[in-house]
Length: 81
Image (cartoon, rainbow, N blue to C red):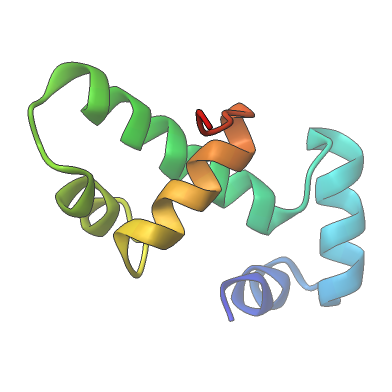
């Protein structure tokens, strides 16, 4: 939905917007947006004592599990066995 709105405001098709976005920034609009949200979450983790659940909610993730998976994927973290 968000990509659709950006495309409409820029007078481009969704695919054209995504191609241009990826060409200039090296990632899709969705990847960029998630990256910005996770960078904000990283700052909250470092600078506050808020729980993961609260940080997940404040940064727009539907739940802590989704947030944790996205965070691990972006920052290439692995769980200890």
